[in-house]
Amino acid sequence: MANTLQTTCCIVGGGPAGVMLGYLLSRKGVHVTVLEKHKDFFRDFRGDTVHPSTLELMHELGILEEFLHVRHQQLRSISGVVGGFRFKVADFSRVPTHCKFVALMPQWDFLNFVTENARRFQGFDLRMQHEATDLLRNSGRITGIMAQTPDGLMEIMADLVVACDGRQSRIRKAAGLPLAEFGAPIDVLWFRIGRHKDDPEQLFGNINYGRALVLINRGDYFQAGLIIRKDSFEDIKRVGLEAFRDTIAQIAPYLRDRVHELQDWEEIKLLSVKLNRLERWHQPGLLCIGDAAHAMSPAGGVGINLAIQDAVATANLLADGLRERRVTDELLQSVQRRREFPTRMIQAAQANAHKVFAQLFRNTGPVKAPWQLKAAVRIPGITHVIGRAVGIGVRPEHIRDARRSPAYRNERVAKIALGVGIAVGFVIAYRKLWGAR
Figure 1 (cartoon, rainbow, N blue to C red):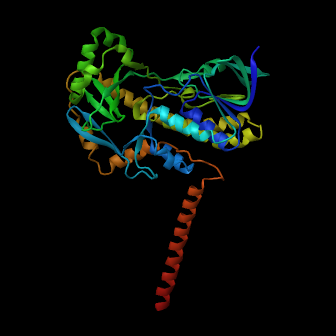
Figure 2 (figure 1 turned 180 degrees about the vertical axis):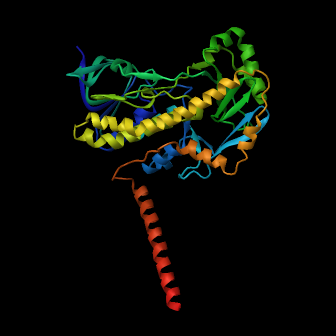
Figure 3 (figure 1 turned 60 degrees about the vertical axis):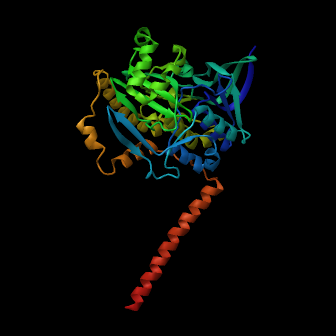
């Protein structure tokens, strides 16, 4: 017989959306149980880019300074190489946030940081090695989940189940929610390769010979991503590992002295790129967010940040209803209404980027940067505009909480005082000048 656990909100999946939502809800006094099927967060080849919008949320929560003590690299601009043409894509120096950079941090460090902070709240309950296997229903409503745990089966009863279990979401499938697929012409091969201190910073990538190579700085090595034609990995393996090494060295010649580090295909992981979203993100008692609601392409590195924005919006809109045990379909619908627009906008941009990659694959020889690209990057201010678009995104979310951190409140008070002071000074100066006449 299965054990039973009662909670207010059961979050399935310990990724960025799940742990952030668990943190935010428990901070607002909601009892939350977060389920993660693995024994830890250590899984390589995940999104590592923490954008300025997410860093601003850390500031609003009063934990930014602590967060920045976790080992990371700071990317203040994004550059790329097309053929032999080097150019800057985005500049974050004018992004209207406290941190004017992208933080490159292994996702397991990010997740460990958030969960450590969440454990400060009594209502946060993280359960590792708990895998949700099915939904529980009563009178047409989702009432909880069935989970496989180290101690056997467990029924977890909840007022709300939130699926944050990724693009292959088991909970989404169990609910039978309709999914719209948009297709993607690319896949990504992820691997590690050594980094030298004098290597260029080119997160946007090296584009040449019908391929694009993305390199994410992790200190003494790169997390590298080779963008390939959809479903072509088996063909690449048949040609052989030596040819794969030659391809890497051909695209980025400065890596030639270390491609020998790749000794086995097991070191190279396939990310099958998907672009899709649910037509309906919810059922009575169930909500899907993050990749469970909308699988994103790695183009732009926005997936982790979009998932976190989903979590913030969910906490803002549902915390009161969860505390009062009145999570209605209208409240769940409000989350989809809030987050569907930015999802559609970003996926449209990614679909256009996919078209560029599809064109790229048609030319396997040396690439020459088109004149349109050379002209575009010289438009005054264009890199700052792109920096804001990448760093902030569409419809950024903010922490909606009357109990803001003291640091946040003090900063707001200081800004208001400064504004009042300037206004009073202007009035006094105006009166003196007027009186002098």
